[in-house]
Image 1 (cartoon, rainbow, N blue to C red):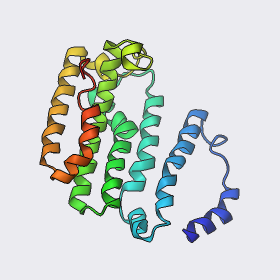
Image 2 (tube, rainbow, N blue to C red; image 1 turned 90 degrees about the horizontal axis):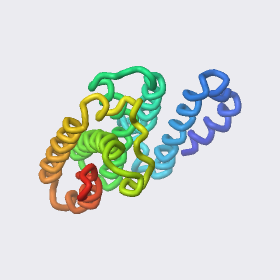
Image 3 (cartoon, helix red, strand yellow; image 1 turned 135 degrees about the vertical axis):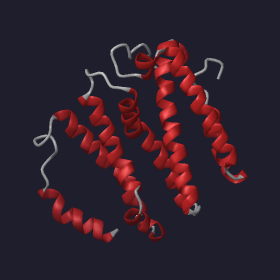
Length: 209
């Protein structure tokens, strides 16, 4: 931790703000990405977790993925995307944050690398499902039902606008079933830890959830 403090003390005052260098939207996103990296730095206080900061993809995915996704979203705001481009957008903007959260938990409790990687991949698909569900909810639920503002995606790059509602629901159902199958392959302790997450999010796109 001392080396981080020394580096910041000596160099941070020399670094200009992002805003004079980049457009405002990108400057805000880059600063937000830095904030998302702070929890990783805090882990370096604990010696057992310090190697994780230097020998894994966690810091990159945790911060750079979010910034990339937001940048794509802003850049293509008024331009149509195809299905793979939308998936790339939301994999970086949303899914990597969920994936890294699961992987960090596995690292902290000492699960082996194979399980860490499986949880990361699981989190990527869970995050993608989360975004698909958001698009469905925006189209099908009232503000009272959803607990948030809906009907905002008419002019956006959404799964519903690209695929239609029925196909989007079918994709969400298929992804949810695949996640359930993979969840059942985890050992009993891991299933117990993840069950509340599954209960809350796996089928939240259905009104009877």
